[in-house]
Length: 123
Image (cartoon, rainbow, N blue to C red; front, side, top):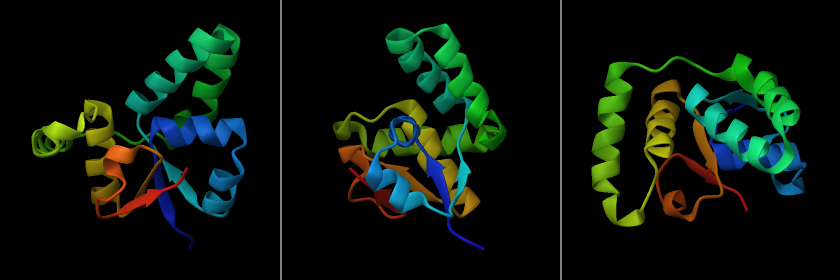
């Protein structure tokens, strides 16, 4: 069984763009994400490429979205407080916490997470 990556919104966008570094890093890997990340993805594509493309992208990844628990939100708030000076989003904190709980690596190109444990940083 291959590695599982938690795809943050940055990673989802890079995958859709066909970024060579993301395609090679994730080849054969399993994907998990959240509907919060898909909401961000949908907005970015909606703004830049229209509703049909946004809906298509959302629908392509929705099967990989896993449910969120109250404990995940509480832990994410603790992480947000801990990383307060890094200006990280709530959604990224939720994803990072969820990745750890699922045994997945947090895949991102966000510099705020670059030096944290359990992060696969790809630009």
